Length: 155
Image (cartoon, rainbow, N blue to C red; front, side, top):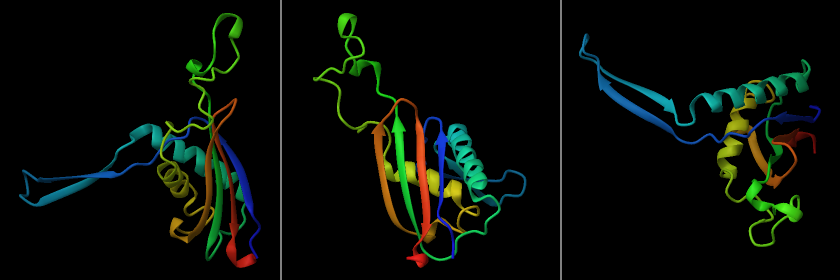
């Protein structure tokens, strides 16, 4: 029986987009070569490392979850200054521009992909074990993600 694991990661959530493949011919050997490059680069690596570190800390030496898992994740973003008034209306949300949810801040599936990979080989063996997701985005005072992972075999 696996215990649920919950943890928060503070920082600007990064998306994990597509990988780009490059092919070339090695000038010395004449052999065809290829490599994959992550489209988000260093910011994504740093974000995944933070997720992995917090996951490892939350697992506290517990064994990885086996079988299907359920993941809850809520990504938090700081509202842009343009959502607020100025002068005597400073600190008050503008009705015209203050949208209720962060619809412009990264695709949920790409945000999830980054944290799913960050928990691999720490919380579970492979992110293909994720069989159910409950994910969302919201405005908050600080940026990050709240994560909870539970084994579906324990239900």
